[in-house]
Image (cartoon, rainbow, N blue to C red; front, side, top):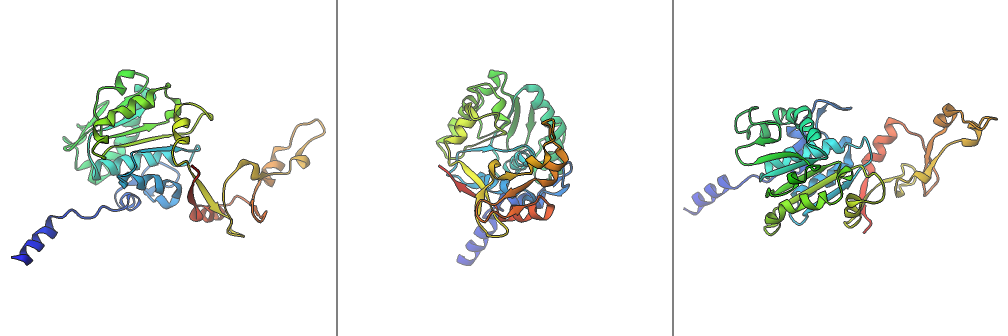
Length: 289
């Protein structure tokens, strides 16, 4: 009986969840983008740590301040797909306006839903479950709203909320959206993810980012292995040689001379695909708070 009981228990026990990056590589394909194919976080390794925090029950809020063209859109898409398939619970996806929310669902996320088998299998009624502002799954509902309408930010209890380009939202909207998860906070099952390219060093989004761990991406110099955060002051170019007699600049000379100077050994990094891969592979986060 003991052996039988153990066999039954093993059969009923849920399989351990894959790390988020492994789950994405297995189940998600990028159809539109610079690197189409399986969702390989290794192509943008700085999104691995924020995504893995989706499995960390001690973390309630994640604020990601990203540069342009840094895979933040795919991070949002991949993170939501993982949450729908592996976590469940009603979810809110918030953009700036109802129009941008509708375009996000109709032109971008709908394709991801239909191409991701574990998520598509949970639709209530195949693609008919995908409406203008909602997606009905057998285990949850996903609401897709704009925050410009304050009523969209109120009333609904949600386990998970995702905010896209939050720096563009009206002041106070992040706080309103966060309140949607209050009933799940007590159970330590809520998750709030806000992602944006900051407009400047102020505003609700930037202040919330500054109040957290403020983890900054660092890379190691290929020459001396010195770890460092990439800073604009380390960008160098031959400005004087490019300066014309009339005070204007020959931009081609500047372009050809641009390099990054290691703050440790002063080695000059010339931008090439090989160097980019080396720097990306060496990257890691450092908490600055």
